[in-house]
Amino acid sequence: MLKLNYSGVTLEAGTDEAGRGCLSGPVVAAAVILPDNFQHDFLNDSKQLSEKKRQLLRPYIEEHALAYAVSFVEHEEVDEINVLQASITGMHRSIEQLSPQPEFIIIDGNKFKPYKETPHQTIVKGDAKFMSIAAASVLAKTYRDEYMEKIHKEFPQYNWKKNKGYPTKEHRNAIREFGITPYHRKTFKLLPEQFKLKL
Image 1: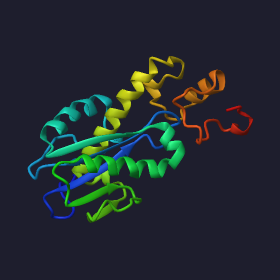
Image 2: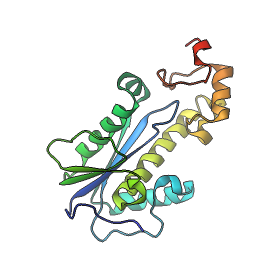
Image 3: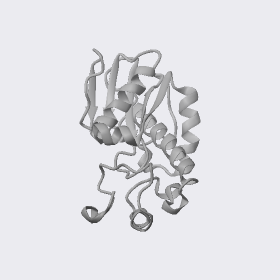
């Protein structure tokens, strides 16, 4: 059973990201402040939900949240600053867009940099413990999936529509066969035998 609040403060934002482990595409982060009467039968960590349930949840979260925002950190920036910094940067950008601004922030995972003077708490597996983090995980995942489906049309041979840029066997085989696209992250180990790969 997910809890609604960690800090006891009304304006508590939950934040999470999607796409950290992908070989291509952006890292997408979201931040959400939920009202104190928020409830939904199947809200959970987005990884535990079917795509259909995530799609149903997204408009419900957007309609009922006190505030929400989604930020994209493009693959070039991921290469430039590294994927952990990209995740934190994306979370900061999302929090920055929230109106009202949060008085407390809870973050999925164990790494974060302070945002302004706002108190915060990192929570390992927070997306399976707190509603606002779970809601942020659903938004980050659905926005990112939508983007990957869009760029799939440019490069259908990588089947991003299905694998969303994650390092599946099929995705790696396509890299082996067709090389890399402008959307691939060049600092990532795209293939196990990378040192032989001419990038």
